[in-house]
Length: 440
Image 1: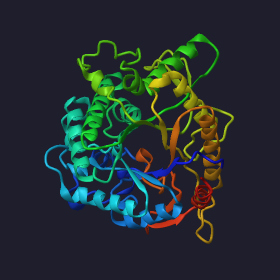
Image 2: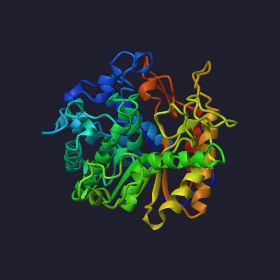
Image 3: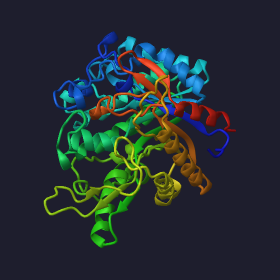
């Protein structure tokens, strides 16, 4: 692995519902993912996050793994239903006690805590009042952000508001394949605006409580037209506007891209874009793959069609492995937004592989090592090309609950035996530990 600039922030990422378990402990309320996962047919093999990696009880062991790995930061998410079981009103002290202890444990080992306030586990009570379709949820989110910062802000100065709002919009509200399982198609667009409004309000609440670095994390992808013709090019432009521009443009330029349903939308009120454009200190980018897009068929309800990328390796999830796409994405964001683009952190990058322990229990995940090495070399090229990238976080520390795919996909540097909760560092863990030890 090449040498990155001094001070480059190395970390790993996780998310609350995917690892914590303990869904009924210490006053936690139900989330939309509890409801979704317990609905028959929604999650592969009927899996749920009820226990997951039992991180809620085993976090000291997991912090030890972080310390031995040698990362300088840990991106985790806070479960809103632990803090406000009903999505509003008084906080649940025991819920905050857990994150209080986790933050202290990280700092004792010299690891910077970087919490994400929302990684998709909306309180079910909030969804019952409309969820992100309801403008009021943006204000409730800001109140929740303030409550967390009031408790942790004396030690936590770096914050992420939302994780991948485009995926939450698309999978959760447009297509219904994730919680809360609504299939509203274009009628889900208010979810985008209300998430962004909540983000802007939360940025202001965090700054008022001493936060020095606030960002949002989105899933971004370079978009490849399927062919040279104008119809494919037009379809790719629309997809790019939805996937990338819908959330980045209003934050960085103060206006939405031209998209169906966004012109003169009644849910956009005077002053909203000023709130949404509240300056952030950095941009979190999650990168997994580029997207190849062609013109839609005659019966398609969408103005584009996502097509496979052939001729490249694939992860166990079937995602194409294209390290150069990360370079293209970084340079493309710089060229697209210019001086409006803040410094970037890669807040997720990783892959699922078919991890099978050998007779000694070791996991030789060579494919993951190759994946990480290739993407880090592409990222280094982007930095050499002048893109201001400040850090890189691997997804993920642990094998975990992979949303609608349950426990069928393993993304971790550490294998989790879900029957015994035994943690086994994989070869990729050892590779990354050695690589980080050699960094300046």
